[in-house]
Length: 282
Picture (cartoon, rainbow, N blue to C red):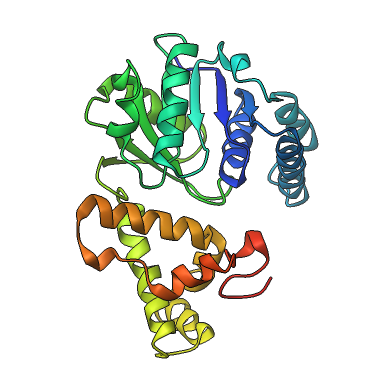
């Protein structure tokens, strides 16, 4: 049977977006974070996002109210014990994820699938922290979650076909398109995207062109909706470095080495849109 009660752990940009799309699609959602102020910001952001859908005529006011009514927030992890399906969307750190999954393995019912929104970390490694690796998989949403239709589904070494089928069905129920990837560093999306972003930083560092010129070439010449440097700011420069590190460590190839200029931005705390300054100022 399709899960109906969804738990989402982590109320940042990705977690709040995931919670929103599940609530919009008729699921009962519990959004968890250790910080109540973070949950308050997430609820306000979801309310604002849904209001935009209403303004554009893509959602009725009653549907918006119903979606908000299906969304609960909590700072208590034990409140998620009744969930039918759990999606983790915390920081991109392998130790933090393994620790959380080990705790969720004890908390959730044995049949519950534990999904991670990780953009690059091994699902096999995360699943090995549990006693249910057959029910651990990757469910990598794209940012912004309410608008992007792709969900990259990652099968770990022990993930069962039954678990993948449930995740595929859920993705379809959200009106999104599931694409399956195997468990290699960066999967498909970031294995291809991050080297392009990294090369854009090398081109900037070496003075091949200005940031505006590099972005313009990719937008106007390759028909990308935004340039790679703008996209990096949108993703978060620290997240880009973390993914590149996973790619380099996991594949052992120096071509994935993060550009020194990209690391310098991160060291300076210029992480992109979320800090108000990255390659560009916001």
